[in-house]
Amino acid sequence: MELDSIECVPPLDLTDEDGIHRHLHHFPSVSKPHTTTTTTNNNTNTVASAFHTTSVHELLECPVCTNSMHPPIHQCHNGHTLCSTCKTRVHNRCPTCRQELGDIRCLALEKVAESLELPCKYMSLGCPEIFPYYSKLKHENLCNFRPYNCPYAGSECAIVGDIPFLVTHLRDDHKVDMHSGCTFNHRYVKSNPREVENATWMLTVFHCFGQYFCLHFEAFQLGMAPVYMAFLRFMGDETEARNYSYSLEVGGNGRKLIWEGMPRSVRDSHRKVRDSHDGLIIQRNMALFFSGGDRKELKLRVTGRIWKEQQNLDGGACIPNLCS
Image 1 (spheres, rainbow, N blue to C red):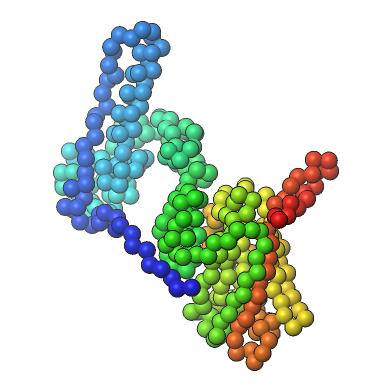
Image 2 (image 1 turned 180 degrees about the vertical axis):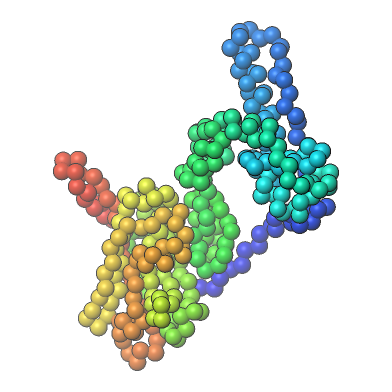
């Protein structure tokens, strides 16, 4: 499978001061809420609170990266603020007035940031949670609604999105094979099995039980020994992945290897799963033995199935629900 290139729009070059200046926008200062008479005191408080929170949230938005700022928040001598990450990227020069930034902290704005309760930044993707500022940052690192990284392993793909979007992306941009059903039978052929470093990264996507699974097969160097490895990843979170199991089998010449396990979530990177050896690993000598012939060509047939674990309400044990 040849790797397809993906053209991505380059991000703003933060080393170009003119580029930074063109992308800045002005934020409103925190205004006192209007005291327009409304029908009840509760309505007045609600309107005032909503207006106040929106203004403060805008004030905490970094004018360079547009992310919410959190301590340490830096400012120039003229009072323009920006986040600590962007301070190092603009060469210590204020992107608004172009004066030297120095090491001035905006302590007042830091206190405001610490006192706010804000919605998760993945609210638009369905997360309903609201947190104090520091708890919000920790939550967002683990939020179940955060987008997924592209699971394709053959190239450094920076695409992120929800599962339906990534399935379409894998099919259209990476030309990945798509299959329906919970059993599979794949044949992998390689003319020169000694070229481990240049081995093709294979990915196949399966749709069963209303979910998507990624089957990976690749060659890599394990210590001094070249090996082949197959493993399955679940396109969803780890808690959902635990509801499924899978088996892989490879063999030939009257021998076979069998692997059974739980698919890893695509939240775990491809490299993390591979380096943890969580899958079917075949030593090259064994792979060539399975291939038969003169051992100069790799011919492996990998079969497997996916099933869903169902809880037995009577005994508490899990029983497999096989896909037809």
